[in-house]
Amino acid sequence: MANINKPIRMCIVCKERIYQEKLIRLQCKNGKLAYFTGIGRSFYICKNCIMKNNGKLLKPFSRFCKQDKKTVLKILSEFKENIVNG
Ligand SMILES: [Zn+2]
Image 1 (spheres, rainbow, N blue to C red):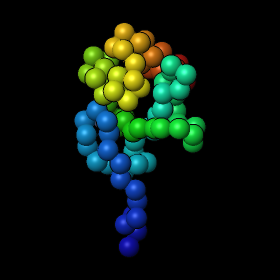
Image 2: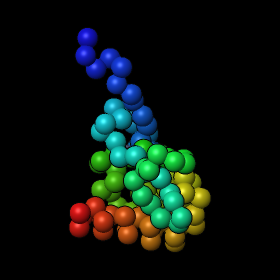
Image 3: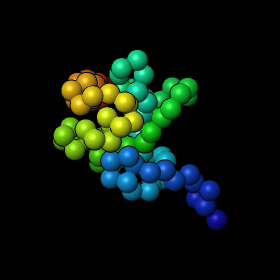
Image 4: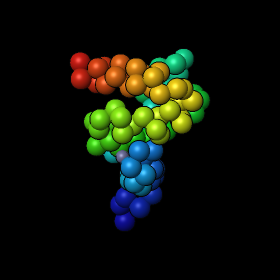
């Protein structure tokens, strides 16, 4: 009986419930988007959603980061640049 205790979490963008290991765990820290460090509030996004247009990510991210939309757009593009550039 493998896999029965795998944690399932919800993507904040598409609201799909999937295995935690297939999600990216993020947090908003000091006005920036970062991988979860183990401290503070965090949220999950699936790998499909993180690649979506920033406009589609705006609403859930502004809610979770408690930032205005302009700031959210900025931190989203900064974060994605880091993903692309490694
Ligand atoms: Zn998703």
